[in-house]
Length: 428
Image 1: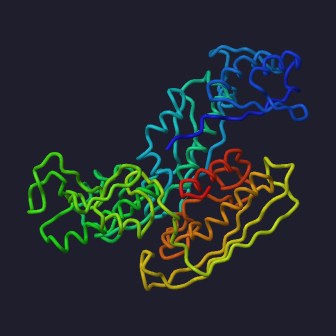
Image 2 (image 1 turned 120 degrees about the vertical axis):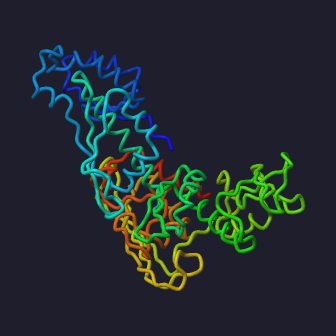
Image 3 (image 1 turned 45 degrees about the horizontal axis):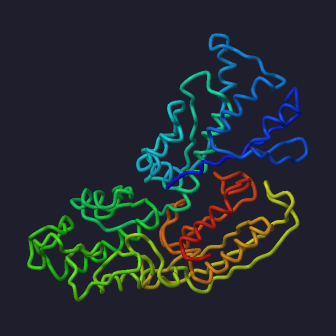
């Protein structure tokens, strides 16, 4: 998971003493002008250097040394608005995405979370406040804001791909599963033989496929356990041949007569691959799509579209597309977590700008809805409740305002981001 490095800032020429010189400096950055404001796009480093270059030209610029800055001025210079985020997502980011957080903060900032994340799983719907603290007084305010923007973008992409589920696992298998699936976060739940698992959708799928295959293998070979490895010699089906290829699904050597190799060059046992494709037509190793992907969205839902002339922040020249989703309650099928049990339906509203790109995304979302990919049945990451209709991993804007952390606008990268999410599912 990579965060976006391109950032857009707005510069008002009214804040500068010499608008002509300002334009000459901005010329190399290909600015877009609207009224008295210039919009400049670039990398974090490029825009930080630009800010440093322009600072002496500002009308209220007063150079100061570290010793000349009072405590009150220090707070004003480094003040950055905090961000309210999901505690579940933040716990995952802290424990599984430490490297990305370090890249965002560098050596200049510290990210603090209040309250602590120790009680997340007892209250999955809780939110926490993320604050950005500079390590040094001399940090430029614009740099602090860039750090905040980078964090929000990274958080949003992580949250849109994250799922929370429960799996039946005996306590002694915990370490083995964590070793096999390092991208997942395993936490004991109230049920002693269950664990709450948080992680990206594709890795959750791989975990469930592994557990399903292991259960079937265990019924055939009672002595097999989760800790078995492809090179193990316990059991008649294993071989010491170093050239023998192991199936990534069942972890057993692939018989030549049963080998199936996909176009992406990954090989599996034919029966294992068939079972995986019955669930989803993607390569279990790399995620390449084969055929049309169908989801587990309950039947009977409706997707209605209306439009209004009012605009969304960031799209002031366009109206708004309003999408109304309605998924009725029903009984779970074999494709759902608890077949035979009832599930609670959902009604959701989402918003798109009525721009050419927004209308293009709407067509893709309609296709995704027809392929049952927008919703699924599972556990809500906001309320923690099970057996309800929840969003799948295609992100929607459910608010017109509030910015990325409140699933609203403005968010200049949203349309390209959701297009990427749809592309991963074969919808282009």
